[in-house]
Image (cartoon, rainbow, N blue to C red; front, side, top):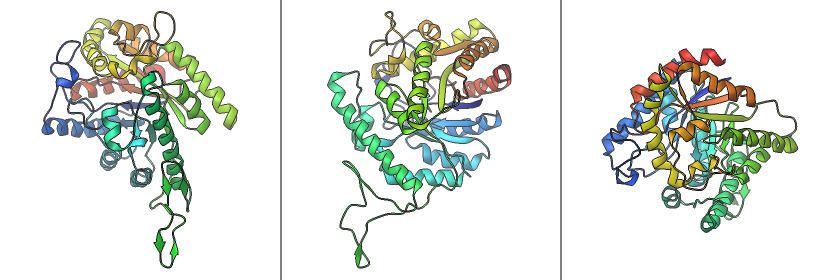
Length: 382
């Protein structure tokens, strides 16, 4: 099984938890946020040292609140590649509609080639209007009728951008003409003629995997149709199993047989301490800050409500609910291993990523969590 680690890249907070301050009331200094970014490079080096296979960065913008302070996972990935030799480097996720597709293709190829083929192409549509609209796109949710148009535009732009990116990455010569993107645009003069095709420089010299977040029914249909790997996170365990199987059925309709557990990845939030009680105490503050920040954006829609259907938008779950739904797995090393083993058996799990660093936690604590996972949990599940 491939083991990865994913972190937001948050400023260490001494006032995290369910109460004040409100997320938007926080404003950290540039020095504090840059310190957190540099610590993320330390975590990537530590992840390799502790035997992880993949280190996942993320992309977010304009977050003065200090939750996610790395706007460009590719740039940071290049720096991390210089500090490491083995671990693969990706992002959950590069927000493709917020990029110029050809600049993204160039930059990913540069990371991938400089790292000797260690780049992982993780792509997503985005979640935060404050980030999306200043960068040239829209974002909404199909669950919210007043955002349906923004969601439609975002999906169209994402689809076209990926078409253009893959055309550039996979072909020596390419062109792409769509509703939002036109490469090359008509009428560009060049040496007595006109430009009708382009060549990306550089292109990837090594194979690479493509992964996309799956958080909604339309994406659950679309991702396997395209043949991308699907990433599942923050979902009730029954929903994970249902969508895991649905992905396989859809993939096989379009691409043929799929090996058990292949092209699907699970992310689990974990906390490992010596005892059950210590783990609950250790996880609660960061769990509550996590949902205080992300609940209003609808991230808990993968939870199950009392009626057995997806939870209503805006749910801010308790730690007890998160553990009951098996979204959070916390406890002693043996308890965490047992929780992961249940998923491994149910899903034939081949790709697992842990999320061990909650908003407010120190980076020293995050490294201890990685070390405990590597030394005390992984041997029980491999």
